[in-house]
Length: 440
Image (cartoon, rainbow, N blue to C red; front, side, top):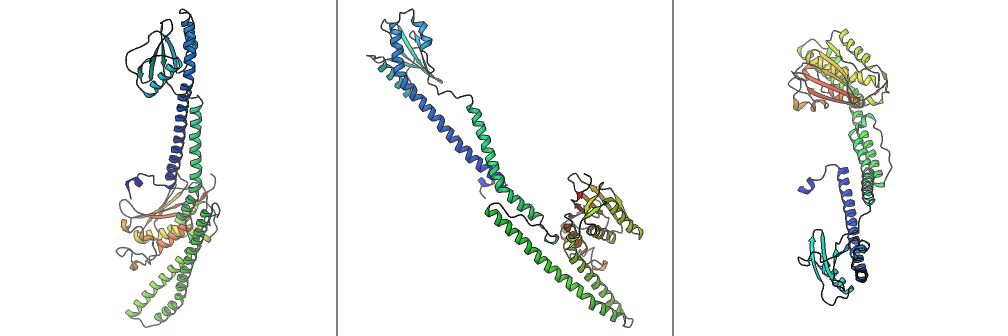
């Protein structure tokens, strides 16, 4: 990528703002520049056209007046770009500039000077030059010329600011109209969860946007169909395996006692566990079908912890949500239960923490002091059938589906499940939910 493109903003909205506003502002600046240039050219032309006749009249008037009356008439003869001085003026210097020579020539023609007039530049910034005449009685007369553009009206800067504001508003409206469907599409893609029955985006707007939304809805349906088909296959295979496994177990138990018989019974127990977890995983994909209901979350979690404590499992509870929420209770119980079972299995105890966050989310954390999971394996641990052979293997009864089931149910709840290494050792499983809170 070239250096020029790297300097552009990263978002489409910012780039469109920059391109549209810069283009409109450049066009506006060119138009304003041409307008002021035209005003300047017009003012110069008007000055030159009127100067010849006006100077001729003024000089003739002063020449006809008595010498002591001429000074009283000078203020009435003054103009915005030139005025008259009774006297020789400033005679030092040379005449500079094409326009100054043109004005001197026009004054000479207007006064019918028989000899070239004497003129000199007094100042170049601002431009100011003098043309020296002589009246019929010999008194010197100086015409001092001060070219200047037409004055700008006081309301013009206000109009310019208003136009720039309108440009900004039009640019914002255009960019918002273009990027809003993209933002909706990106948000829908981020929250895409076919297993939880994601809502279709409303098709409408410009043709291109409507086509993109229709394609996204169709893609969501296809993904949901493929996922449902594969989960049905998994559920069917897992369910159908239970019958032959049961028959095999009965036949094995009828065999004479021997080491081979015990090994077969252990292997069948592992297969039964795997089949049950497979069925549970397939069913967890439909956690979004459970109706949501009003739940006192603090009482719900306290009851869950008490159930564990009643059977002698060391589970503690800290914190509180503070308000009732609307949520799917069975799916939530399964998620938290899986996380607690996982912590108890590998650490012997579990700590349950709940807290309300500033953004409206509710954080439910399950912490343990077990062997933990390496940082590089935390994301993979949520995948189905993933095991860490060093510490969480099949010998401990794990099938690699417990966390995957929790992850799938968390998505059905509209939440986020993440794993973190706990400072000091152990695992921190964090479930963030965004339920409707009652009472706010």
